[in-house]
Amino acid sequence: MIKKLITIATILLSISILLACTPKESTILLPNLTGMTEDQALDMLASYKLIVSAQDVINNDIPEGRFVSYGSDLVANDEVAEYTTIILYFSIHANILPNLSGKTQAEVLYELDKLDVVVEIQAYQTSEFPAGIFLNYGNGLSSGDVLENGAEVLVFITEGVPVVNRGLLISKYLEGALYNRAIELYNSTDETIDLSTYHLSVYSDGADQVSYLIELTGTINPNETYMIAYSNSDSSILDQADFTTSQLLFNGNDTITIVDSNNKIVDIIGTIGWGLFYLNDRTLVRNSSVLEASDTFDIGEWDEYRADYDEIFGSHPVVYPTTFTFDSSFLNTPFSEPGGMVLVTYVSIYDGDTAYFTPGFLGEDRLRFIGIDTTEMGSGTLATQARDYVASLLSSATTIYIQHDPASGNVDTYDRSLGLVWADGVLVNYMIVLRGYSQNNYQDSSNALIFNHITLSTWMTNAEKYAKANQLGVWA
Image 1 (cartoon, rainbow, N blue to C red):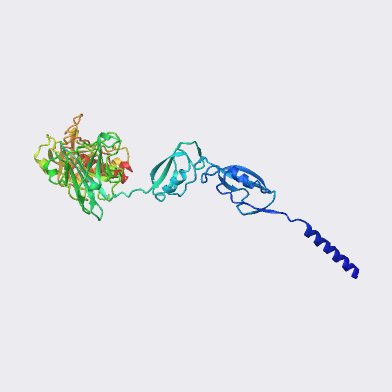
Image 2 (cartoon, helix red, strand yellow):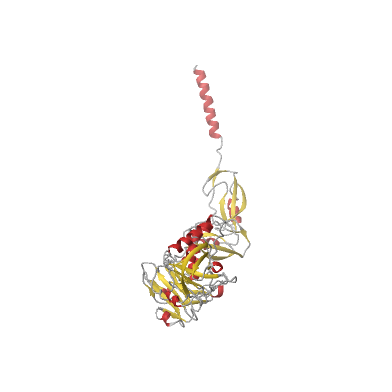
């Protein structure tokens, strides 16, 4: 037993001696090659028992031809075994557009300065991203693109959208006889507005480019107006004006805008580049429901008055009339003359736009109502409703006048009697259109008849708009 133990001990000792005599595998610490060229790095590693190769890698952050890194994620001072295969990477430069997302303009220029390209910076106004950061490349370029030396690179940097003071609006517009021209501004805010930071831009005759500017002066207090007038306007206009200028000479087909110090359109009347349109011989007042300016013109935001109606300037908002009656001065004019009126008695109805009156409007001389055309009897329920409605107005009226319309005359080409019918001061022709029993057919370019400072043409147009909006009668 003792002999066996000695034998085992001898074997273990022999193994220990053998292991001790076997040489250990040698290791190498990788040196720091920062700043070295390829030749310098290879010369340094020539004495190392390593298998070394060199490769180029694009890196614009390190001088061209200089050491970038070891391969296989190795770094200086790492320990490797002898004869390990080592890759050395050396920089080469290329015009590869970097990913600039989230970088400021200064950071963008710093990154692109590493490339041999020509850089152009342009601001892009947006409210979707923070101001002052890279948005994108222009001209179809994107990060990762490789460009030739000297290539042009367009870069967009975000810019905040300037806040436009929509509380300064055009409240009135007057284009009248001869040289009567005026624009009124209104301050709907709670703060005084300095007008020297604004100007008017005028686009003449439907132009798509600004024809001339009118610099403004002065201030507008909260909820007050500021009237700008052409210097040759009538004294009734000039006496109210806060500012007069010889430049404000428009003729109805010119677009006028308020422009702020950021060259942004604050408000507009007319449509830029729309060609010819006509806002002549009329006074327009912004609806009381409009509380903010807009860079898009909508004629629906404006109430229309007769030309040269300047009495309403100086305050805003203005309540637009909803009712009117005849001008009693026409009672002294015979029916045979334009505008003349005759007192009559209602006899009977023929249809919605024709009735009999005495004296003088019986039989074939029955009266055809001006500016309307109701559906013929027998054509449906609407024709009956129109006839019954007119009959109720006329049969219940205490006083009925027929007025000679200056535009249409008092007889048509078929020698039928024509006229405007007033029942207790209410114009029946207008009411028929207002209720939707007829579309508006009234026309008078001369605007000979004006009621409550609004032309009859406008009253009839407004009546049709109301019927359409409420889907009444023929518009249902």
